[in-house]
Image (tube, rainbow, N blue to C red; front, side, top):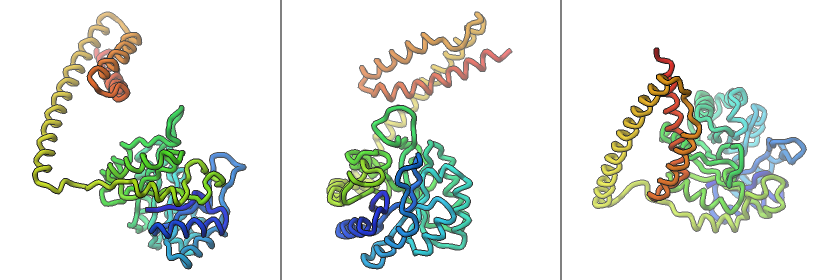
Length: 341
């Protein structure tokens, strides 16, 4: 569990927050010292003097401390003040040049590093940042899932896109995966449900922004909670067992998994049959010199399949996403048919 304010704003605010969190058993205190903002003119952090405040938190309260670094100079300054854990932010992860600069500054140093996902949904960039830090000799690494930027309206500040961190976890099974519900939700009321979902998916920890007076915070006010509100969130969270611990439950789960396997086999057979029909209609279009994309037909499929899903008790939104993929593959297959001589 990691908690603390989005930004270190004053020595008094840092100490007040840290003292309240210490009383809750929080061991790792977070605070931003350098704040890369989307647009200039807003609060961009207090800089190096804030590191002295974090050092005071360590000395007087016995908490470990962590802050974000975005340049090699940040790394040098943070290490000078004995910051226990560093994290690399989303805006930095997206830039291999910046990550390499940080990696160069970390050579020969043993300090834990947490790496947030890049702002855009690119798993390769996230993995690349992890690998760049790992090649310095640092093996105490963790990944932070803080969501991804998207265009258009969403209830989230940054869309979770859960499949990306799950894929990362599958590739790096021994590396802790930490949820950042503050940045995903962007609103304090979303912190609990996002965190609970992450725990249900087997995440290893959480990093949550906490401020004694969130509404007056100099950055990200809407997504911060008071230490008291954080305690309420933590008390409500349920941590599930990673595995079944009863032989009868194991047997029943295995039966259900076999049924799922059989259902998946039927789905794949049905998709294979559909794609064979797609190729046949592609041949028919080619024979009659008709273009591949038939927009009205696509609209009809998109509408009717969602209706069928609702009648069957399946999420229409899920089926819409599924058929987008099916349509892309159908277009690809018919395009290949058109090119064949």
